[in-house]
Amino acid sequence: MQAQMLAPAAVLVLWTLIMLAWVAATRLPAMAKMGTNLKSAPPGGRGVNLDGVLPDSIQWKSHNYTHLVEQPTLFYATVVILTIMGAGALDVTLAWAYVAIRIVHSLWQAVVNTLPVRFSLFLLATACLLVLAIRAVMATLLNDPSVIAS
Image (cartoon, rainbow, N blue to C red; front, side, top):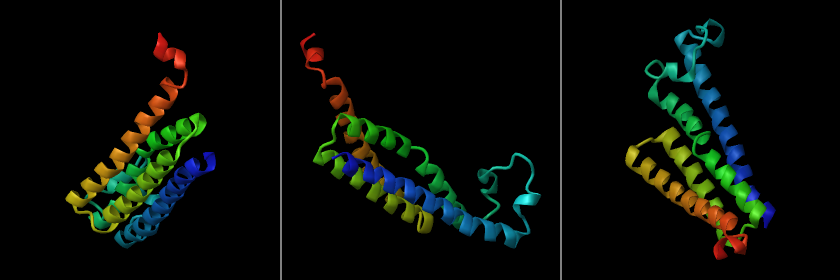
């Protein structure tokens, strides 16, 4: 069951890199159209400095990429814990649900970006992660029966 548990995490890593490529593919031409390029950017510039400069629809992809390197780090740690402790079918199902919802969330944020739907998707993914995290805690704390007897 280890490979099945790790597969969703690997897919989310790949999806995150796809989003990074999408950021570059939309942001760099938009910057060039404005007459800005990486060589002329001021020292210490960051992507958030382009908020309000580039069109919002261009920046949405960047915002989503940032989101994919925030909460999913908890997902990766949880997946590793459950893999080490012995993931079950429910864990694998929840991990795939989390990844599928995060991909839909990415596409929604990058293309449509209406907040009610985006927030609902975020809540659904977070619910999957919460159950996974609880199961990881249970797997680690309850793995030693002497902990319960003490």
